[in-house]
Image (tube, rainbow, N blue to C red; front, side, top):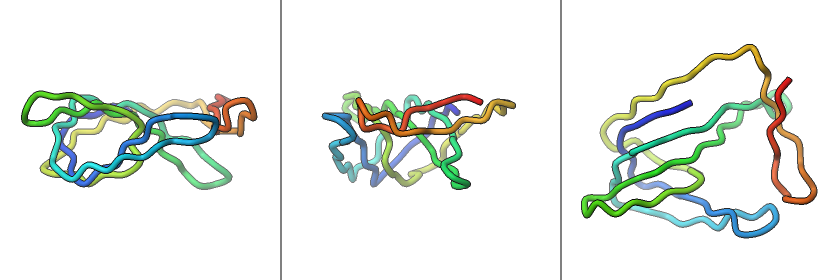
Length: 102
């Protein structure tokens, strides 16, 4: 999955320690310069894992794990279909749901 566009009212996470993302909220609109990620299946439920790079009107850039966000104007998202099944399983050493391909 990849994309560009604009987000508002979004939350980014930064992986700080085992199994813990530190969230930070942003209210002002930012241009979505790059979005990348995937969709996996967790016990019958689909889960998005997205990372973004965003720029503000001052040309400052931020990025991280996209926890949530709203589309400001428009977003262009491209999905690439594969026959591989993406699943996630808990990795004890990191505390994260690691990706596995079947």
